Image (cartoon, rainbow, N blue to C red; front, side, top):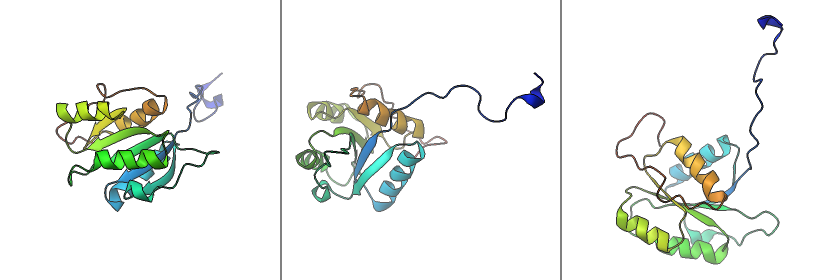
Length: 156
């Protein structure tokens, strides 16, 4: 078969990925907008985005969220309270924490509170997506997610 006869486009089989339902809490409106766009761009869903966990509605039992993306924007140490509050509204959420600085103390505290992953800002988009997918599978990846210290191309 000549090259001209081969169908255009993707010819290798695509890998079947499970769609992950997420909830985004915290950060600025712009940060939540960016995260929502990145999550949706990678064929996952955002069921809610709220500035605080107090605004979360109880989970829909027919369509529950799996992953809580909790943005700790560095303004105080509110993320433990936000995590606890989110769990009162939606107890089955698996948390992924986004922070401005990954420290050993923060990782230890996050581990004690059941956080599955901590992403350091700035992060590569592929790290966000792979972390959401791993957390949805129930994986604890606190020690595997990188935390770059300088922005590189493709980071947010």
